[in-house]
Image 1 (tube, helix red, strand yellow):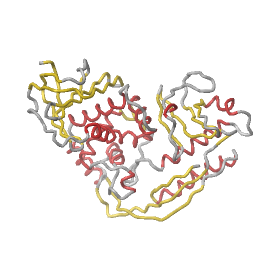
Image 2: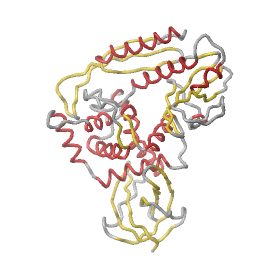
Image 3: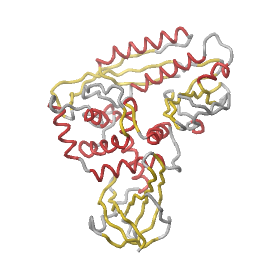
Amino acid sequence: MIATEFRIPLDALDGLKDRIAEANKKAARLDVEPLTLTIGETDTVEKFVGGFPTGEVLVFVNGTITGTTPRLNGWAFIASLELFDDTAIIRSVPGEECPPEHRNRGNICDHCGHKRRRTATYVVRHDDGTVKTVGRNCLKDFMGQSKHNPESIALLFRHITELLESLDAEDDLFGGGRSRGGKTYDLKRILELTSTVISAYGWVSKTMVDEGKAYGNTTASLVSSYLTAQPEKYKGDAKLVAKVDAAKNAQRDTTDAEAAIAWLTDDSMEASSDYIQSVQAIAKRGWVANKHMGFACSIIQAYRREMARLAKVNTNSQHIGTIGKRETFTLKVNRLIFSEGFYGLTIIHLMEDKDGNVFKWFSSGPELDEGEFLTLKATVKDHSEYQGTKETVLTRVRAA
């Protein structure tokens, strides 16, 4: 069963109706139940451009899309995987999670057993509970004889999941932003910019706006607006660029970006959800397409939440030492995060002293031993703070 709620600008409703009509035409040809669109109440919010009010309002419409998951000979489609080497971005049916053992199967098909270059696989579940990952070209043999080509039904399923995913896109809903076309961006640059935007405006997700917990532009829409800004032409763009540029801190933003990438590409990092699997795929690839911009911009905040959880918000931690000064510290390594990825080897050392003050060191190796107090010579690189925990960032760390 497919059931998803949405909230979109009223002027986008006709486009949604057209896309549903297109999907339903395909569904009719394949004897698949059509999607049903139910329109609910409308509400208004003040229109912002570049984070600043324009005096206009946007009308939003709330609604629900319901339907039935495409199925054939007892097999139901529950997820499609967009493959990149040995990892994938996952699109699951609303209310479903792709089973953990099928999130990162890479290019292997359970039907033919072959690992070959593929752009997509599908996760299907039988009425008896059996779950399989099947390559597109194997669907016909796997699902057996049918009136309709299983590949066509699979493409319909992917079309539906992409349509539903677009309803949650962290896009230019508030800014009326200009199209970004088919551009791709270096992930590290996007994460650095996201860190800057969060510093300037705070973190705002589409869910927070929809639930009335935040007001104005989402973080992802501000990042997108900045990338396409024409400050010489639009006053809103000029204000946005000025505010973001004023909030830039190269050391902080680069540290954030590299740490978040290292966190997601760490070999010990498990894909605990479809979301984590998808952002891991983006991190390992090292670049981001427009359609995945919302995923990419969420990485910084997801990393910060995880670091805060691990640190359990040490409110007693204080900044230690003087920035730029080389000093001696006695520290215990609580955790190491390893990443061998697009930007080479990065090792994050999460440490603390005997008073519980938190320290962090980014290195390219070799790593320090975990669990023991070590006397170290290091230069204080920065005094930062995550979710209420003060951290002392070190560089040029050596045994004393």
